[in-house]
Each structure stands twice: as structure tokens, then as C-alpha cells.
Image (cartoon, rainbow, N blue to C red; front, top):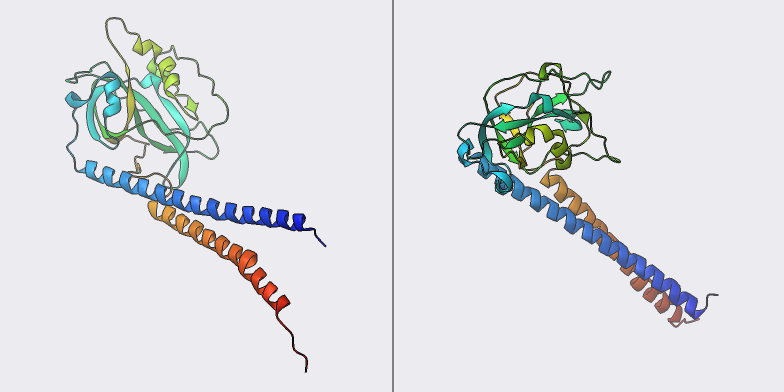
Length: 279
């Protein structure tokens, strides 16, 4: 027979586990519901900006002010591609397939008040070759001033990575012989080093914009641009379904806890102490 203290200790542990499971599952339900609402707001913002005026180059803010540009804002910029500073970002998905995103810096020119600023542009996605990882489309070779239409994103597409990636050697050969490196991620500090030559031109105040642009037009051979707008990955409806599942689990935990820890023990005590009658 268990002592009174042992029974109390066991009851306390069971109650703590029951309450912990109920609170944990309820918290997950609230978190998933919040995720759905966040993505709903992002979708509404994206749809509103789809009908807003396109920002031309003369409205693009300079320097740190580029951080104030709203996500999904459509822009039309003029500049020169820095082809020999392009980078392929690995393990990026589009329409359920895995591949690469090409990032090429754009040196702003033309009527922009901040001509000379460098903007990172996600130019498009290319599928992965199952046999050869480095088999990628040739880099676009547009020269001279180009016009790029796209929308603003706060940062480059990012993927989970273990450890720190080493920087590739900065190319010294001509752009025609350049082979863009493949990286898992490319953080802002990497771009400061990778673009050091282009940012340090004498007589010009060049800075790297704090936001990036996902290109829509003009089309480029070998690159796809079915960019997601409003949300990425799991849809709001899927988050709401997850929230409902966690809420149901929380109610089940609460119901089972009340049944096994309160209602059933009371019934048992009632049956034990109930008077018996013999004929």
C-alpha cells in the first residue's frame, strides 16, 4: 500500500503533467492562429500594392532610407548589371521543385536621386539537375543600361544551413569567363566583402540597399519567376487547420484529466462507501 505522502506526490505529478499538456497544446493552437492572421495581413498588403502605382527610379530612396520601402511595393529601376558578382542560392523551391535562385547586383543609374547605389535583385529560379548540381543555365549577359520591374522584399531568400560558409575567391577575370558561385545563403556581410571593389569606387558614394528586388520583367531565358506573394510555404488555411487540431487536443487533454483525476475518483469513493444491503 502506498503511503499518504506517496499518493499525494503521485497525484501532484499527474496533475502537473495534465495541466502542462493542456496549456502546451492550447498555446500551440493560439500560435498557429496568430500565424494565419499574420499571413492574411501579408496577403492583403500584397494585393493592395498590386494595384498601387509603380515606383519609378526617381522615387527610390537612397542609402539607409531604402529600408522604408514597403514589402511587395512594385518598382521600376534603371541600372547596369554587375554580372561578375552574381551568386546562385541553393536549395530554393518553386512550385514544389527544388533548384536555385540567381541573385545579381544592379548598379542604379539614370534619373534616380541615388544613382550609384547597388540593389540586389533575385532574377529568377532554375531547376536542379539531378545528375549534376553545377549544371545551371548560362548567366544572362545584358550589357548597358537596363530597366528592371519587380517587387520589394525585405531580404534575400534564406535557407537553413549548418556552420559558416567560406567566401569564394573574388573573380579577377573578365565577366565573360565568370562562373557564379553556388551558396546556401548570402548574408549582407558576405555582399559587403563580395562587392568591396564595386562599393569602393573613388569619387562616388556607393552603398548597398537594405532591401532587395524580385524581378518580374523583362523575361529571361532559363529563369522562372512564379514568386509567391502574400505568404510563403504554408497557407493561412493550413495554419487554421493546425490551430483547430491543437485546440481539439487541448480539449481532449482537459477532458481526460477531469475524468481520470476528478470524476472517476469521486465515483469510486462513492461506490466504496455506499451502504450494502443483504437479504
